[in-house]
Image 1 (cartoon, one colour):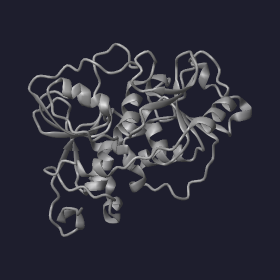
Image 2 (spheres, one colour; image 1 turned 90 degrees about the vertical axis):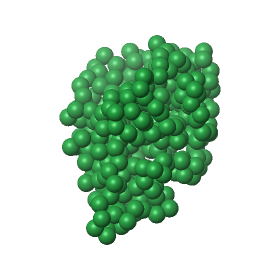
Image 3 (cartoon, one colour; image 1 turned 135 degrees about the vertical axis):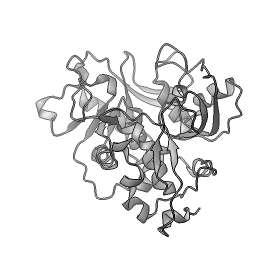
Image 4 (cartoon, helix red, strand yellow; image 1 turned 90 degrees about the horizontal axis):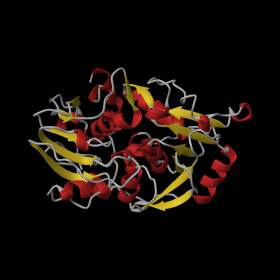
Length: 334
C-alpha cells in the first residue's frame, strides 16, 4: 500500500476525509476519538468532522454509531450498529433504517452489527474488526513501566461528572479502593480532552496496568490489542466466567458481544459484581490471571477493506504522518 503523494510531503494538498464520530463538547470519550486518529494516521489525509445528520458523504469507523446516522451516503469501516432492544445487555435486534440514508458496508465491528444491516436488505461482507485493534501500529507502547497491578476502567455512565479526572459515582461501592491498595489498583475513566495527545496519554495509562477490568468496551479493545490480560466488569449478579456471545439468556454488553465475535472469539470473559457491593480486588486479579487468553486476530482483511474511493490506507503509519497527526486529526477544533 502507498500513501497519496500529498502525504509524502510534495506540497500538493491531500483530499479531505469527512467522518462522523461522537466528539463530545468540551471533553470527548477515548474510544469515540480513536476513529479519526486511526484513519488520519493510516491514510495521511486530514479528517473533518461531519454531523451524523447530513447530506454529505461521510465515513464512520469506531463506536456504536451506525444507528445514529441520518441522510446521505455513509461508508462503514469497522463501526458498530445498535438495535432497538430495550436492554444494552441483550443480543442486538430490530434496526430501524433511517430514511434517505444509504449505508456502504465495507467492514463491520462484528457479526451482530452485520446482521442488523443484512436484515435491512444490505449485502454485507464477512469482514469484521474494530479499527482500534490497529493502535499498536501507531503507538507501540514501548518503554511504559507497569505501575499498577490492576486498572479498573469505568464507563461514562458510572462517573460522577463528565471530566477527565472524575471518580466513579460514590453510590457504586464496587469501585471503592482500600487505602492499602491505592498504589496497586487504579480506577481510570475514559473522558479526555479532545486532542490526539490526551487520547495517547489515556491509552498509555491503561498500558501501565498489568491487568484490566473494564465496563468500557474500548478499554478492553486496547488491552486485547496490546496483549494485556483483561475481562469485562459486569454489573449483574451471578457467576463469573466465559459466556457465549450468542447466549440470549445471559446478560452481556451488546458491544462486547459484537467485538469479540468479530475478532473470531464467540465468547466473552466477564467478572461479575453488582454496583452496590464492594469488590474483592485480589479475587478479581486472580480470576483474570486464571481465565484470560490472548486474542489471535489478523487485521489484514480489515485493512484491505478500507474504501478505496476515500483514500489509500497504509498498513503501518509513516513516521512523517505520525509527526503531524495532531494537525491531520484536529479533534479540539471539530
